[in-house]
Length: 298
Image (tube, rainbow, N blue to C red; front, side, top):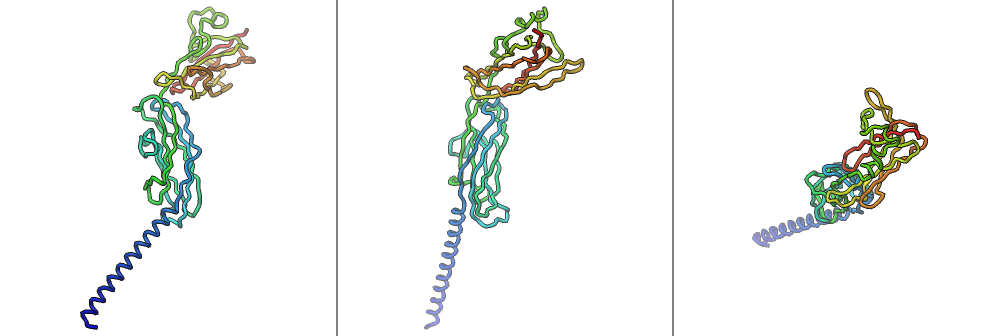
């Protein structure tokens, strides 16, 4: 074979070998990519809840959720595969937008296991958003790359809640069913309720009477809020020269009991001694109302 022909054949064979090598590498990379892509699965979110569902402007709420991931890979020198999560406010359903309130990631050890991660996070609701109905958006992701989001790996959950509320007394006399004018025994002949220790006395009841009262809760637009709850505590009070001391007698969560967002309470006084007692209302607008009453002998 002439030398010129041999040289051309050698060049051709070298080109063929290069093409085969490049094609092999491409197939290898493609095969690895397919394995990586098929080695993950996101089974979805679960056990989502938000408390409270009525949040004052600028207030805080607790968000909790779980999400289940399957990874089928070998070990990772970084210690696992990240599974990012985000908590966002409002935005478009199915789109990673809205105001970011919190974010993080749970690491999967990547040993061919299916694991459920649980997250509980307290978030602050921005003050600049409007009152009314809003939505917490939970986004969880299953990814092999650090913090790389892919649409087919994301799962969304939505939790509605209300921002802003107005609280008003709606008992017959303020928060209670009677004022000083209706105090038992005529209020001891006093025209105005006196200061007793650290607080003014609201009214008097006879031992055995039921103390009743009511609170109305509306959102910032004036609509009744019927899914709120807030604590009531009842204390026996010892009035001292320097300060008062309290002993808790009972506590409960007040829930909506009637129309127009009314939250009413009843406190029985059978068996209690005459003296001063305090009612503490932890109202859903973030304020606390103390009501001091006096029980007198029948």
